[in-house]
Length: 136
Length: 136
DNA sequence: TATGCTGTTATATATAACTATAACACTAAT
DNA sequence: ATTAGTGTTATAGTTATATATAACAGCATA
Image 1 (cartoon, rainbow over the protein chains, first blue to last red):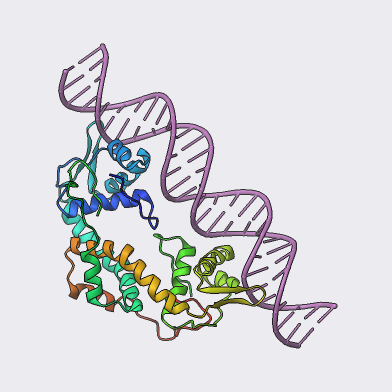
Image 2: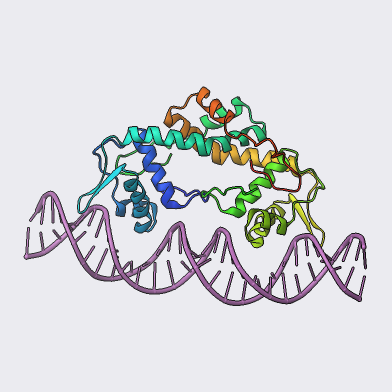
């Protein structure tokens, strides 16, 4: 119900990232409507302008199209566009920093895999719905 | 000379992180003075209050001690304190998100290692000095 | 004592992020 | 035509981040 926000990124960017994750994971497919601005705002207890700002990023990236009065919809080719773009961005901007940290802390593959495996346990009745933005 | 700032984190936190990296890497050892607030401010072309704020974080974390009129110095035990704390923080807060992204993008170990290997090439005369905060 | 380093405090200003509240515009269905 | 759902715009206020400028306080040394 009440997801938490990471203080290392503005909320609107985290929202954008969550939708991106849903597209990559196939939870949102081409032509699908995004959960509505006001629904998300209510569910996450966030201002609807903040949600809109996150969604507008997706529009600017050509991933999503807005149809006034109807909703916002995943564009054709969105997933492929993302696979290219996000890969490049991650490898160039995020991974080097993360890799350096791993080296610096002397973390081993086993510890990393253990930590990744136990990162979340979903409560039994928390089956994901298409109408809500999902936590990663 | 003129390092760049990552727009995904406030400057003062990036400064804090760079000093932490220098401690972990052994560039700054216990008892060593930190590069002075005003020097760093000048070199990075940043307000000295921003640098001070980053340094104050380190004081709050017991990693550094401030001696008015003399400078700021790495505390005894700072590196060990960091090794515990940063490991825990990284594995709990950052790595799960990063790991999920790697899975989502279908990145393979080889690609990751390649990207990490080519992440920086130091110009020949850019030997790190103790008196400057280093880029990771 | 005077100079030149340190860290620190005080004001004031600008911008980004987020919020609350209200209103507007368009679409679909009753 | 009305209603209820979409996205969108407008105003205004708060907090965090970063800036510029000035001044204060402590230490070391010439």
